[in-house]
Length: 397
Image 1: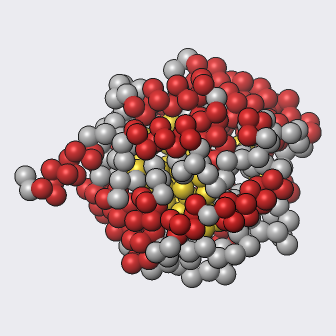
Image 2 (image 1 turned 90 degrees about the vertical axis):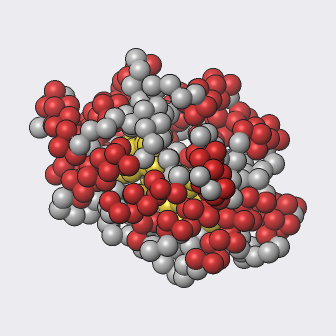
Protein backbone atom coordinates (compact mmCIF):
# COMPACT_ATOMS: atom_id res chain seq x y z
CA UNK A 1 0.00 0.00 0.00
CA UNK A 2 1.45 3.38 -1.03
CA UNK A 3 1.25 6.53 1.10
CA UNK A 4 -1.71 7.87 -0.85
CA UNK A 5 -3.72 4.67 -0.35
CA UNK A 6 -2.80 4.60 3.34
CA UNK A 7 -4.00 8.19 3.82
CA UNK A 8 -7.25 7.40 1.99
CA UNK A 9 -7.83 4.32 4.15
CA UNK A 10 -7.24 6.36 7.33
CA UNK A 11 -9.57 9.08 6.10
CA UNK A 12 -12.34 6.67 5.21
CA UNK A 13 -12.14 4.82 8.55
CA UNK A 14 -14.01 7.70 10.20
CA UNK A 15 -17.25 9.34 9.17
CA UNK A 16 -16.10 12.97 9.40
CA UNK A 17 -12.88 13.25 7.43
CA UNK A 18 -11.74 16.41 9.19
CA UNK A 19 -12.05 14.85 12.63
CA UNK A 20 -14.24 15.69 15.60
CA UNK A 21 -12.18 18.59 16.96
CA UNK A 22 -13.13 20.84 14.07
CA UNK A 23 -16.79 19.85 14.29
CA UNK A 24 -16.86 20.40 18.06
CA UNK A 25 -15.15 23.79 17.75
CA UNK A 26 -17.79 24.92 15.29
CA UNK A 27 -20.65 23.76 17.51
CA UNK A 28 -19.17 25.34 20.65
CA UNK A 29 -17.86 28.66 19.34
CA UNK A 30 -20.39 29.07 16.51
CA UNK A 31 -17.69 30.98 14.68
CA UNK A 32 -16.76 28.58 11.84
CA UNK A 33 -19.07 26.80 9.42
CA UNK A 34 -20.29 23.38 10.36
CA UNK A 35 -21.97 23.18 6.98
CA UNK A 36 -21.73 24.84 3.56
CA UNK A 37 -24.08 24.28 0.64
CA UNK A 38 -22.30 24.55 -2.71
CA UNK A 39 -24.72 24.89 -5.63
CA UNK A 40 -22.27 23.65 -8.25
CA UNK A 41 -24.74 24.16 -11.12
CA UNK A 42 -28.21 25.47 -11.90
CA UNK A 43 -28.65 22.88 -14.64
CA UNK A 44 -31.01 19.98 -14.02
CA UNK A 45 -32.44 17.10 -16.03
CA UNK A 46 -35.78 17.23 -14.18
CA UNK A 47 -38.35 19.98 -13.67
CA UNK A 48 -39.75 19.06 -10.25
CA UNK A 49 -42.90 20.82 -9.08
CA UNK A 50 -41.42 22.28 -5.92
CA UNK A 51 -38.07 23.51 -7.32
CA UNK A 52 -37.17 26.73 -9.13
CA UNK A 53 -33.38 26.46 -9.14
CA UNK A 54 -33.14 26.82 -12.92
CA UNK A 55 -34.78 30.23 -12.60
CA UNK A 56 -33.14 31.41 -9.38
CA UNK A 57 -29.55 30.89 -10.56
CA UNK A 58 -30.03 31.04 -14.32
CA UNK A 59 -28.01 34.26 -14.55
CA UNK A 60 -24.74 32.63 -13.46
CA UNK A 61 -21.89 30.80 -15.10
CA UNK A 62 -20.44 27.85 -13.22
CA UNK A 63 -17.15 28.03 -11.36
CA UNK A 64 -14.45 26.15 -13.27
CA UNK A 65 -12.90 22.93 -11.98
CA UNK A 66 -9.75 24.80 -10.94
CA UNK A 67 -11.83 27.41 -9.13
CA UNK A 68 -13.66 24.61 -7.31
CA UNK A 69 -10.30 23.25 -6.14
CA UNK A 70 -9.50 26.65 -4.65
CA UNK A 71 -12.94 26.76 -3.03
CA UNK A 72 -12.13 23.45 -1.33
CA UNK A 73 -8.84 24.85 -0.03
CA UNK A 74 -10.50 28.00 1.28
CA UNK A 75 -13.33 26.11 2.97
CA UNK A 76 -10.71 24.03 4.77
CA UNK A 77 -8.92 27.19 5.90
CA UNK A 78 -12.03 28.60 7.58
CA UNK A 79 -12.71 25.32 9.38
CA UNK A 80 -15.61 23.89 7.37
CA UNK A 81 -16.67 20.43 8.56
CA UNK A 82 -19.30 19.45 5.95
CA UNK A 83 -19.99 20.58 2.40
CA UNK A 84 -23.12 19.68 0.45
CA UNK A 85 -22.56 19.43 -3.30
CA UNK A 86 -25.93 20.18 -4.81
CA UNK A 87 -27.50 21.99 -7.75
CA UNK A 88 -29.55 21.86 -9.95
CA UNK A 89 -28.37 18.35 -10.45
CA UNK A 90 -24.67 18.12 -9.51
CA UNK A 91 -24.10 14.96 -11.52
CA UNK A 92 -24.68 16.84 -14.79
CA UNK A 93 -21.22 18.32 -14.21
CA UNK A 94 -18.58 16.10 -15.80
CA UNK A 95 -16.10 17.13 -13.12
CA UNK A 96 -18.33 16.44 -10.12
CA UNK A 97 -16.20 13.50 -8.94
CA UNK A 98 -13.06 15.63 -9.12
CA UNK A 99 -14.79 18.40 -7.12
CA UNK A 100 -15.90 15.91 -4.46
CA UNK A 101 -12.42 14.42 -4.26
CA UNK A 102 -10.90 17.88 -3.75
CA UNK A 103 -13.24 18.47 -0.82
CA UNK A 104 -12.43 15.10 0.75
CA UNK A 105 -8.68 15.58 0.28
CA UNK A 106 -8.97 18.88 2.12
CA UNK A 107 -10.52 17.15 5.11
CA UNK A 108 -14.10 18.25 4.44
CA UNK A 109 -16.86 15.70 4.81
CA UNK A 110 -18.73 15.68 1.50
CA UNK A 111 -22.45 15.10 1.16
CA UNK A 112 -23.92 14.60 -2.30
CA UNK A 113 -27.46 15.60 -3.21
CA UNK A 114 -28.99 14.23 -6.41
CA UNK A 115 -32.33 13.64 -8.08
CA UNK A 116 -31.35 10.00 -8.61
CA UNK A 117 -30.49 10.14 -12.29
CA UNK A 118 -26.73 9.73 -11.79
CA UNK A 119 -25.13 6.90 -13.77
CA UNK A 120 -23.74 3.75 -12.20
CA UNK A 121 -20.28 4.77 -13.40
CA UNK A 122 -20.53 8.07 -11.53
CA UNK A 123 -21.72 6.35 -8.35
CA UNK A 124 -18.88 3.84 -8.59
CA UNK A 125 -16.35 6.66 -9.05
CA UNK A 126 -17.73 8.46 -5.99
CA UNK A 127 -17.37 5.32 -3.92
CA UNK A 128 -13.78 4.91 -5.08
CA UNK A 129 -12.75 8.38 -3.85
CA UNK A 130 -14.29 7.73 -0.44
CA UNK A 131 -17.69 9.42 -0.69
CA UNK A 132 -20.10 7.86 1.83
CA UNK A 133 -22.87 10.40 2.35
CA UNK A 134 -25.61 10.96 -0.21
CA UNK A 135 -29.19 12.19 -0.49
CA UNK A 136 -31.70 11.35 -3.23
CA UNK A 137 -35.09 12.98 -3.74
CA UNK A 138 -37.98 10.56 -3.29
CA UNK A 139 -41.51 11.63 -2.38
CA UNK A 140 -43.52 8.46 -2.84
CA UNK A 141 -43.20 4.67 -3.15
CA UNK A 142 -45.62 4.89 -6.08
CA UNK A 143 -43.84 5.38 -9.46
CA UNK A 144 -46.61 7.24 -11.28
CA UNK A 145 -46.93 9.86 -8.54
CA UNK A 146 -43.17 10.39 -8.34
CA UNK A 147 -42.91 10.77 -12.10
CA UNK A 148 -45.66 13.41 -11.95
CA UNK A 149 -43.92 15.30 -9.14
CA UNK A 150 -40.67 15.19 -11.14
CA UNK A 151 -42.29 17.08 -13.98
CA UNK A 152 -43.99 14.21 -15.84
CA UNK A 153 -40.65 12.48 -16.47
CA UNK A 154 -41.55 8.87 -17.24
CA UNK A 155 -39.53 6.22 -15.37
CA UNK A 156 -37.71 8.80 -13.22
CA UNK A 157 -38.83 6.87 -10.10
CA UNK A 158 -37.42 3.65 -11.54
CA UNK A 159 -34.13 5.33 -12.45
CA UNK A 160 -33.86 6.67 -8.90
CA UNK A 161 -34.39 3.17 -7.49
CA UNK A 162 -31.66 1.82 -9.78
CA UNK A 163 -29.31 4.52 -8.49
CA UNK A 164 -30.23 3.73 -4.87
CA UNK A 165 -29.47 0.05 -5.50
CA UNK A 166 -26.11 0.99 -7.04
CA UNK A 167 -25.26 3.10 -3.99
CA UNK A 168 -26.15 0.23 -1.65
CA UNK A 169 -23.91 -2.03 -3.69
CA UNK A 170 -20.92 0.28 -4.21
CA UNK A 171 -20.74 2.52 -1.12
CA UNK A 172 -19.41 1.33 2.26
CA UNK A 173 -22.18 -0.37 4.21
CA UNK A 174 -21.93 2.17 7.06
CA UNK A 175 -22.53 5.10 4.73
CA UNK A 176 -25.24 7.62 5.48
CA UNK A 177 -27.86 7.71 2.75
CA UNK A 178 -31.08 9.68 2.96
CA UNK A 179 -34.23 10.21 0.95
CA UNK A 180 -35.20 13.88 0.72
CA UNK A 181 -38.99 13.88 0.84
CA UNK A 182 -40.97 17.05 0.14
CA UNK A 183 -44.18 17.11 2.14
CA UNK A 184 -46.88 18.59 -0.11
CA UNK A 185 -50.64 18.19 -0.61
CA UNK A 186 -50.15 15.72 -3.45
CA UNK A 187 -48.08 13.21 -1.45
CA UNK A 188 -49.13 13.90 2.15
CA UNK A 189 -50.60 10.40 2.57
CA UNK A 190 -47.37 8.85 1.19
CA UNK A 191 -44.91 10.34 3.68
CA UNK A 192 -45.02 7.60 6.33
CA UNK A 193 -44.71 4.98 3.57
CA UNK A 194 -41.50 6.68 2.36
CA UNK A 195 -40.15 6.37 5.92
CA UNK A 196 -41.04 2.66 5.99
CA UNK A 197 -39.40 2.12 2.61
CA UNK A 198 -36.23 3.95 3.60
CA UNK A 199 -35.91 1.86 6.74
CA UNK A 200 -36.34 -1.35 4.75
CA UNK A 201 -33.35 -0.51 2.54
CA UNK A 202 -31.10 1.00 5.24
CA UNK A 203 -31.68 4.62 4.26
CA UNK A 204 -32.99 7.59 6.25
CA UNK A 205 -35.62 10.24 5.52
CA UNK A 206 -35.44 13.99 5.87
CA UNK A 207 -38.72 15.86 5.41
CA UNK A 208 -39.06 19.31 3.88
CA UNK A 209 -42.40 21.11 3.55
CA UNK A 210 -43.11 22.57 0.13
CA UNK A 211 -42.26 26.28 -0.12
CA UNK A 212 -44.03 28.74 -2.43
CA UNK A 213 -43.04 32.13 -3.79
CA UNK A 214 -44.09 34.67 -6.43
CA UNK A 215 -42.75 34.68 -10.02
CA UNK A 216 -41.12 38.08 -9.43
CA UNK A 217 -39.19 36.63 -6.47
CA UNK A 218 -37.75 33.33 -7.71
CA UNK A 219 -36.11 31.21 -5.04
CA UNK A 220 -34.16 28.05 -5.47
CA UNK A 221 -36.47 25.56 -3.81
CA UNK A 222 -39.77 27.41 -3.80
CA UNK A 223 -42.54 26.74 -6.28
CA UNK A 224 -44.65 29.27 -8.16
CA UNK A 225 -47.61 26.86 -8.01
CA UNK A 226 -50.14 27.82 -5.28
CA UNK A 227 -51.47 24.25 -5.42
CA UNK A 228 -48.44 23.18 -3.38
CA UNK A 229 -49.61 25.28 -0.44
CA UNK A 230 -51.69 23.41 2.13
CA UNK A 231 -55.27 24.70 2.50
CA UNK A 232 -56.50 25.31 6.04
CA UNK A 233 -58.71 22.26 5.95
CA UNK A 234 -55.56 20.11 5.60
CA UNK A 235 -53.73 21.52 8.64
CA UNK A 236 -55.13 18.92 11.03
CA UNK A 237 -54.14 16.10 8.71
CA UNK A 238 -50.62 17.51 8.34
CA UNK A 239 -50.26 17.46 12.12
CA UNK A 240 -51.51 13.87 12.26
CA UNK A 241 -49.02 12.74 9.62
CA UNK A 242 -46.16 14.45 11.45
CA UNK A 243 -47.16 12.81 14.72
CA UNK A 244 -47.29 9.44 12.95
CA UNK A 245 -43.81 10.11 11.58
CA UNK A 246 -42.53 10.80 15.11
CA UNK A 247 -44.03 7.52 16.35
CA UNK A 248 -42.35 5.61 13.55
CA UNK A 249 -39.00 7.24 14.40
CA UNK A 250 -39.39 6.50 18.10
CA UNK A 251 -40.21 2.88 17.26
CA UNK A 252 -36.93 2.52 15.38
CA UNK A 253 -37.68 3.72 11.86
CA UNK A 254 -35.10 5.82 10.07
CA UNK A 255 -36.46 9.35 10.26
CA UNK A 256 -33.64 11.88 10.67
CA UNK A 257 -35.69 14.87 11.80
CA UNK A 258 -35.88 16.14 15.38
CA UNK A 259 -39.08 16.99 17.26
CA UNK A 260 -38.11 20.68 17.15
CA UNK A 261 -37.88 20.53 13.38
CA UNK A 262 -41.04 18.47 12.84
CA UNK A 263 -43.06 20.76 15.08
CA UNK A 264 -41.85 23.72 13.03
CA UNK A 265 -42.92 22.02 9.81
CA UNK A 266 -46.45 22.26 11.14
CA UNK A 267 -45.89 25.88 12.19
CA UNK A 268 -44.58 26.67 8.72
CA UNK A 269 -47.46 24.96 6.92
CA UNK A 270 -50.09 26.62 9.12
CA UNK A 271 -48.52 30.09 8.98
CA UNK A 272 -47.42 30.26 12.61
CA UNK A 273 -44.07 31.72 13.79
CA UNK A 274 -41.10 29.34 13.57
CA UNK A 275 -39.33 28.39 16.79
CA UNK A 276 -36.01 26.84 15.74
CA UNK A 277 -34.23 30.22 15.77
CA UNK A 278 -35.42 31.28 19.21
CA UNK A 279 -32.08 30.63 20.93
CA UNK A 280 -30.30 33.00 18.57
CA UNK A 281 -32.52 36.04 18.93
CA UNK A 282 -34.98 34.85 16.29
CA UNK A 283 -32.31 34.81 13.55
CA UNK A 284 -30.65 31.85 11.81
CA UNK A 285 -26.93 31.13 12.29
CA UNK A 286 -25.78 32.29 8.84
CA UNK A 287 -22.95 32.92 8.11
CA UNK A 288 -21.28 31.70 11.32
CA UNK A 289 -22.51 28.09 11.29
CA UNK A 290 -23.49 27.82 7.64
CA UNK A 291 -23.78 29.65 4.35
CA UNK A 292 -24.23 28.89 0.65
CA UNK A 293 -22.03 29.15 -2.43
CA UNK A 294 -23.64 30.08 -5.72
CA UNK A 295 -22.77 28.32 -9.00
CA UNK A 296 -20.31 31.09 -9.93
CA UNK A 297 -18.45 30.66 -6.64
CA UNK A 298 -19.82 33.72 -4.84
CA UNK A 299 -20.78 33.36 -1.21
CA UNK A 300 -24.48 33.72 -0.37
CA UNK A 301 -26.35 33.87 2.90
CA UNK A 302 -28.38 30.82 1.86
CA UNK A 303 -30.05 29.35 -1.22
CA UNK A 304 -32.62 32.17 -1.19
CA UNK A 305 -30.63 35.30 -0.41
CA UNK A 306 -27.49 36.73 -1.99
CA UNK A 307 -25.13 39.24 -0.40
CA UNK A 308 -25.18 42.83 -1.70
CA UNK A 309 -21.51 42.56 -2.64
CA UNK A 310 -19.57 39.82 -4.40
CA UNK A 311 -17.35 37.71 -2.12
CA UNK A 312 -15.75 35.02 -4.27
CA UNK A 313 -15.03 31.87 -2.30
CA UNK A 314 -12.22 30.89 -4.67
CA UNK A 315 -10.40 34.18 -4.15
CA UNK A 316 -7.13 33.80 -2.21
CA UNK A 317 -8.36 36.42 0.22
CA UNK A 318 -11.68 34.74 1.00
CA UNK A 319 -10.67 33.28 4.40
CA UNK A 320 -9.85 36.83 5.54
CA UNK A 321 -13.04 38.19 3.99
CA UNK A 322 -15.11 35.53 5.76
CA UNK A 323 -13.79 36.72 9.13
CA UNK A 324 -14.41 40.35 8.25
CA UNK A 325 -17.04 42.15 10.30
CA UNK A 326 -18.50 43.90 7.26
CA UNK A 327 -19.36 40.63 5.52
CA UNK A 328 -20.88 39.20 8.67
CA UNK A 329 -22.95 42.31 9.31
CA UNK A 330 -24.27 42.21 5.74
CA UNK A 331 -25.28 38.58 6.15
CA UNK A 332 -26.82 39.19 9.56
CA UNK A 333 -28.86 42.12 8.26
CA UNK A 334 -30.33 39.92 5.53
CA UNK A 335 -30.98 37.03 7.95
CA UNK A 336 -32.75 39.36 10.37
CA UNK A 337 -35.26 40.29 7.67
CA UNK A 338 -36.07 36.67 6.80
CA UNK A 339 -39.20 35.12 8.32
CA UNK A 340 -37.48 31.73 8.29
CA UNK A 341 -37.31 28.69 6.03
CA UNK A 342 -37.81 24.98 6.61
CA UNK A 343 -35.44 23.64 3.96
CA UNK A 344 -34.01 21.07 6.37
CA UNK A 345 -30.26 21.48 6.57
CA UNK A 346 -29.87 24.97 8.02
CA UNK A 347 -32.65 24.57 10.62
CA UNK A 348 -31.34 21.17 11.71
CA UNK A 349 -27.75 22.48 12.05
CA UNK A 350 -28.98 25.22 14.38
CA UNK A 351 -31.17 22.75 16.27
CA UNK A 352 -28.31 20.25 16.61
CA UNK A 353 -25.99 22.99 17.89
CA UNK A 354 -28.37 24.70 20.31
CA UNK A 355 -30.66 21.92 21.63
CA UNK A 356 -29.22 19.10 23.74
CA UNK A 357 -31.43 16.13 22.78
CA UNK A 358 -31.03 16.57 18.99
CA UNK A 359 -27.28 17.09 19.53
CA UNK A 360 -27.00 13.74 21.32
CA UNK A 361 -29.15 12.05 18.69
CA UNK A 362 -26.87 13.28 15.89
CA UNK A 363 -23.77 12.18 17.79
CA UNK A 364 -25.19 8.68 18.17
CA UNK A 365 -26.11 8.48 14.49
CA UNK A 366 -22.86 9.72 12.99
CA UNK A 367 -20.18 8.83 15.53
CA UNK A 368 -21.19 5.25 16.26
CA UNK A 369 -20.94 2.44 13.74
CA UNK A 370 -23.79 0.24 14.89
CA UNK A 371 -26.52 -1.40 12.87
CA UNK A 372 -28.58 1.80 12.97
CA UNK A 373 -26.57 3.05 9.96
CA UNK A 374 -26.22 0.14 7.56
CA UNK A 375 -27.08 0.05 3.87
CA UNK A 376 -28.89 -3.12 2.90
CA UNK A 377 -27.39 -4.90 -0.11
CA UNK A 378 -30.66 -5.25 -2.00
CA UNK A 379 -31.08 -5.37 -5.76
CA UNK A 380 -33.24 -2.86 -7.59
CA UNK A 381 -35.83 -5.61 -8.11
CA UNK A 382 -35.96 -6.31 -4.38
CA UNK A 383 -36.35 -2.60 -3.63
CA UNK A 384 -39.18 -2.27 -6.13
CA UNK A 385 -40.94 -5.23 -4.50
CA UNK A 386 -40.46 -3.69 -1.04
CA UNK A 387 -41.93 -0.38 -2.23
CA UNK A 388 -44.90 -2.17 -3.79
CA UNK A 389 -45.55 -4.18 -0.62
CA UNK A 390 -45.51 -1.03 1.53
CA UNK A 391 -47.75 0.86 -0.92
CA UNK A 392 -50.26 -1.99 -0.95
CA UNK A 393 -50.23 -2.37 2.85
CA UNK A 394 -50.93 1.34 3.24
CA UNK A 395 -53.56 1.31 0.46
CA UNK A 396 -51.71 3.70 -1.81
CA UNK A 397 -52.21 1.43 -4.81
